[in-house]
Image 1 (cartoon, rainbow, N blue to C red):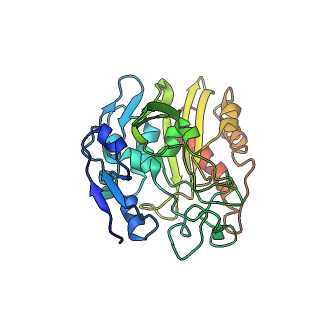
Image 2: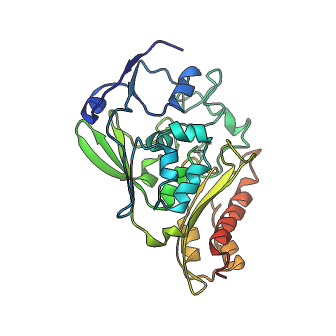
Image 3: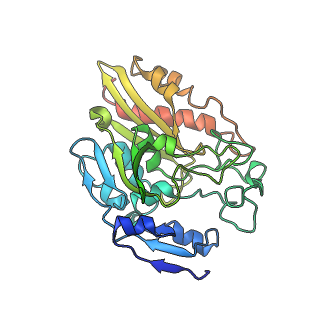
Length: 319
């Protein structure tokens, strides 16, 4: 590891006015520092900064430093969010990792994490070897000729499905952004992964109240049962009355460069009967525009089946 200066601000004001890279749980940053993927000269340990708290009184609010395990086990947290957290990493990591850090984690693309290889996210303009290389885990949606890496966060998928917002704070004030628009498609600038400005810090995650989100789930398909990133995942919330879908929220992970909201699937579900046939018809729209690579051509089909599985999980006993 290269030498760096470690600072520990105790107030939000000190944190956002000090130059450096923020450290919370450290489960991503420390790994990337060990690999020399990230080499910050100044690291700001923000664990003493008062950015905690879980409020379920009207919608959901999580302080950015709340641990993933604490949010997952808190009463009133929507099942899709809780399940996405519980299916992430290991219990030990969930006990350490912050919700803000999870949303900011970098891609797990092996080319990004190997400094001996080119990577447009790490070194802009150097190339994307995954396009013609080992790409089984990579994206089929939201890709570009510059990057095909998937977004790593599970809970971000559930939060995007439920219209979550981020409250961001800096030395010049605060602003609120939709999580879905916070993440950037790679385009020609894959090194710009999100809308966080220099010196800005995630202060809070807000999820609007949605009473029927109590009927929600997160389905994750992966190569092994634990401690593995998604080949494909689906976060679904479903409002069903009299065996007919009134409303729906659907987003996918493991198949796109950002958490991927699926408005066409949602629209197809609204007003449809809660049947396998209707679910399959709606899910058929999920992979529109997909660009499979040499080793991940199975992902569009897997995405459709994963969405149907999630929908059936939410309607068992109601059809």
